[in-house]
Structure formats: C-alpha cells, structure tokens
Image 1: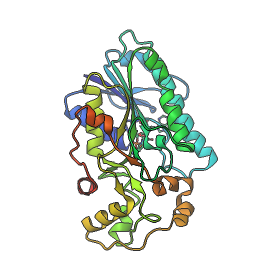
Image 2: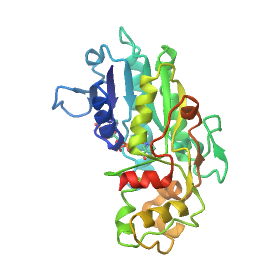
Image 3: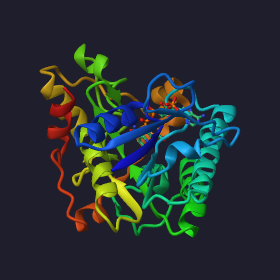
Image 4: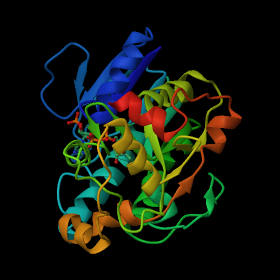
Length: 296
Ligand SMILES: NC(=O)c1ccc[n+]([C@@H]2O[C@H](COP(=O)([O-])OP(=O)(O)OC[C@H]3O[C@@H](n4cnc5c(N)ncnc54)[C@H](OP(=O)(O)O)[C@@H]3O)[C@@H](O)[C@H]2O)c1
C-alpha cells in the first residue's frame, strides 16, 4: 500500500516510516524542507501548498505534523503556534485530499489525550466520554473538526488520541531519564494522578492497524490498556533502573519549570483504548513495566 506521512521527521513519524517500510508499504514523506530523497515530497502547510501529483495512488494518509509541544514554554504566543500549526495543516491537507482523482481510503490524523481535559480524576475515559475544558481540550476538538473536509468527501477519518508516547530515543520519558538515572527522580505532585502511556512500538503498530484494517473510522484512544498512577510509574521506572525513588517533585516546582505544560504531568487522565480493543488490536506492551522495559 502507498502511504503518505506528514511530520515524518518527528518522534512518532520516524518510527512510523520505519515500521511501514519494514512491513512492505511504500511511503511518501510530506516534508516542509526542500526534498532530499526520492520518497520526500514538499508541502507548505502555512501557504496551503500540497503536492497533489505525488499523492496519486495513495491509499492512506497519516498526518502527524504540528509545532512540537515540548519545544518551548507555553507562552500565549507559543500556544497560538501549537494551535494554528495543527488546525491549519489539517485543514489544508484534508481539503487537498478531496481534490485527488482517486481519494485515499483513510486519513489518520493525530489528536491527543488532552481532548479529555487536564484532569478527570479516577473517571474511566473511553472514546464516548465527552471532551474536557481548557486549552488542550479546545485545541484537540478544533484539530479533530479541522479534518471535516475529508470526512465530507467520504474518506474514513480516524482521530488518534495519543497518550504519552514512550520510546528509547525520547518522548515523554526523555526529560525524566537523566534524573532517575542519577537516582534523583520522584513522582510528580501527590503521585496519585493517572498517566495514560503507550510504547512507541505499540503506537506504530496501532497506526498500522488502523490503516491496514478496512473500516477504521472515528476517534481512537491510542494508550495502553492499563493506565497507571504517576507514583506507580515512577516506582517501576526507578526499580528498572536499579535506582532509589527519591522525593516527589512538588506541583509548584513543575509549574515554575515548565509553566502551563505542568497541567499535563499533574492532571489525572485514566484513559482506556476501548475502540482499538473492540477492533481486535492486541498490545505487545500492555502495562507500565513492559513499556518502560521496551524503552530502556
Ligand atoms: N509524542 C507524544 O507523546 C504525543 C502525545 C500526544 C499527541 N501527540 C501528537 O502526535 C503528533 C506526533 O507526535 P511527535 O511526538 O512525533 O511530534 P514531534 O516529534 O514534535 O514531531 C512533529 C513533526 O511535525 C512537523 N512540524 C513541525 N512544525 C510544524 C508546523 N508548523 N506545521 C506542520 N508540521 C510541523 C515536523 O516534521 P517535518 O519537519 O518533517 O514537517 C515535526 O517533526 C504531534 O502532532 C503531537 O502533538 C504526540
């Protein structure tokens, strides 16, 4: 199958392109720079330019592009960039796909667990749970809505609400590992908040599953089936690194260090991948220990 991927230089995109290629798929990488390889095609989401000729014959499109969430402190200006880069690029791509003579069967567009808001306590959240409040929840709703032109053209649109993706070279674990390796890591806040995490390996498998499986459509929580408390996650991480787990990192210190992004680390989201499970997807790394082991 021919698959187009945007954001393919990112953390998930790099692994996805490798996974698709290893599975025998052909990949067109939608890149914003001047193409440097035969499988790259240039697009300019800000100017609304999409290389339609290079998308001829594409059966699936995966859109992962957007300004990196961890690239900057969440100032008002940066939050605008986070929002605009996702909404604009999704609208541009979804609209362009409708102009293809042969439209792709499926358009998988990234979304995030932030859809459910910053903090839902112990509530079990599946895809039927309503959206939450706050900046990320608003962003995710607009992001999902931005794919409407593709939906209106009968392309099956999937919204992948990713949890914290954890992998060997980065992701959610990257800022934590040096601290834990030094024996200085502890849980955040009171540690009781639920974290919905997933291994990079299972993230790629889930994306492949959605594009390979005919009939995938709508929102999918892309999180492991066993959300853990942040305290349990840091306990397992310290144990796997054979380091002590030290004092908790207080909420106000996180707020000082990363600003509003601390909401993501301190809020509680207990998300289950109900629709992936219903569709028969099986996780290779279903719990925190397996996810951490795979990453280390
Ligand atoms: N990783 C996670 O834990 C996680 C959790 C929830 C949601 N997500 C979402 O899933 C998607 C992929 O995550 P990721 O961790 O792979 O992200 P990432 O490493 O930050 O990569 C995002 C990619 O988006 C492209 N990009 C950057 N600025 C852009 C802009 N202004 N307009 C369009 N594209 C732009 C870049 O690729 P090019 O330079 O090749 O265009 C970049 O490599 C993101 O949208 C992210 O918000 C990720």
